[in-house]
Image (cartoon, rainbow, N blue to C red):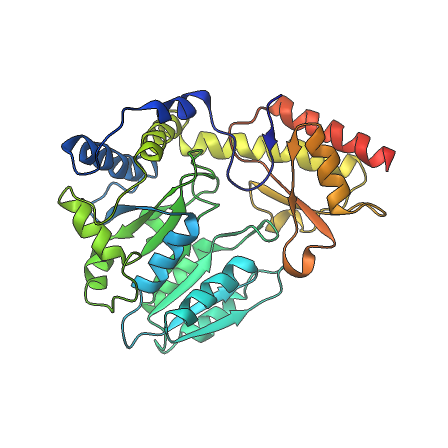
Length: 360
């Protein structure tokens, strides 16, 4: 029985992406690998409509968190100051990264079920105290989608660089590179792109990538300009995950065929099936519809049922749900609607959940 992953990554991938792992063994110092690397970097820009000369892409072997840390640790100058928007675990993680790398920063802290106040962001950015602002686009702690277009507009108006954690958003939420003009956007292969774990990437404004070359090297492995400079001249500073690169190239081709807009629409239909089904079972969704992302729903646990009981029974039926985090761990569970999963699979999940609740 196929296990349906309802966690926000790793996701179920298509047979063609999985089959791509069977590509030939390849030395990462041979021209064949650099052709593969070039194809991935080019396809990233094509698929996400960032093909203007303004943007470039860079790939590293590591999780999405590795790319976010590379972006944060590389993206602030020696005298610069970073403002971190924090309304969940992943915003907190960015603040922790800044602290560990000795980056001067402030945190605009918000409740986990609310977006940061745009008025407060505007007030903080006025006077150019900050060189950059970091935000999590889709905060998977709760499934909350932050107002990235409005935050981007405030950054542009104040001359502040915008660093975006789009690890669980890119490919599942609209992100307009031409209009919003983020300076750096970090993502991973194994969420909405529907690749496999092990590679992450960023789309970066070329001007910003050039500026980062003069910033402190706060990490050997995670210094983004090092990876980018090597990749621009068909090289790599470290050993990449070659077989995962085959799968990522295939996943990007698959996404290009479906189109990002088509994938967003498919995920939206899946979320509607799940949310309507959950509410029909009498369950309570944590967030109002206006704050929910396209791809993840946080649900209050049914009275008298623990997460472990719910998880284990659904797992026996072939579905993997996700626990709450932090202070919410005891009160909710999460269901992601991303990956190569059919509408019928989501309907089966709602039915299985209903039967578990009825028995409990």
